[in-house]
Image 1 (cartoon, one colour):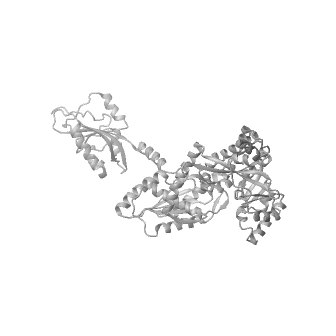
Image 2 (cartoon, rainbow, N blue to C red):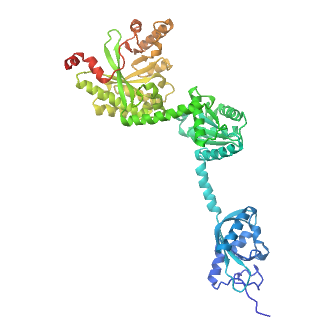
Image 3 (spheres, helix red, strand yellow):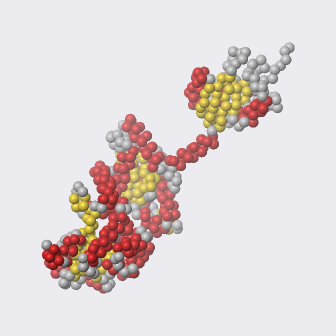
Length: 586
């Protein structure tokens, strides 16, 4: 008999692990070091003829559950490839046949049934004296890498605080749902949920409590929606629910469940917090739309709900899309107006009613639009408040008023003072007093030359730091005027403690003063209350001599309105107060 031959890939220390008949000729490896390396590498290394395994290293044997006394030749290589990978396997074989090498990823089934991803390299081994085909392959486990990639992907698509889908995830899910719904001729809907007055929770309990509340809200929303719905948190206290395959009443029904779920008190930091929410709903309808447009429509519906006081569900109104587009355009124009210095100030007199002598002037902002002409503040101030543009605009007003005071002084008009309106956003800035003092110091203006008008509505539900800021401004020498008195429902205790030396009665109470006895009685009561608190009263909206006479008889000290003069430019104020000098110049 001829001498038996040992297979070059047979492990000399594991002789029980046989792979093939000794007569089978396989590629020879001369280096013992290379064989030892194959045995200790964590990668799976195998040789196969496509029907059975001819060789496997320790890592491959462990993966396939091949023991020392198990014949690996009995394992069909095709059985370790899941059925789902049959196409991938076919492509790999075809590529090997063409180029003799294949690189790619493939799933293999472990001995315990687990499916594991691998990065693989496979090629046909060169033959010597046999017509059989032999293939070599190495497999590197990608489990850890895939887990890490999945974790990274989860961060990309998951909102960190609540664990809900984030904006990116919502947009991608919505895009896919819209494509599918268009083909199936079904509808996709969005439910936008915004917590009413959430800012008060943060200011009262702090950001940490606010975050816990947002998590609790997200939990309740998820319990209220359908299992197939996607719940996302976009930003702040704004949530979005995507509903696919809509039935006629799906959006209303789900919205009502959300509203009901959030109506019960939350216990945060050992305090019960009751919430209301504004909900906007929109369906894709039969039109083919894009995710961003549908998202904008849902947010537009929220704005409509909030305009009606919140705590309501509002369907999207197509007119709102045009309004929002118009507001976005206006916002861009406002930013441009700041850069191009398109704003200007007009000044209206505030006078003593008994003598009609000038006391001070109120600075009123105007926007001289290059195409639309003079734009009144009612058309852009609210938008400036919403966008935060009111802060740089407000600083410009104060600076411009101070510069005008300097100009009047240089023209011989001594002792002039100007009232400027301060917005809630401006006063909410902790450094607002410092900014104000810096402007006055730069222009050489004293605090007693600037009166700060703050609307009464700003005083409700304000933080202690906000109110302390007003006291600090009064102590610094500014005259504090409560604007629109009577429209903000301030309590008597507030009026008694707030540092306002002047109360300005809102013009809505003055307009019907002549014809309505009830209005006269109301204004009379307001003036008496202000005097009892030691405050001076200004009535705005004085349009006629009859208005002035009634207010004088009611002991109102000051008046402002068209009867005493319309708002005019700083140059016209100079001309008004120096008529003789003007005539000489002519």
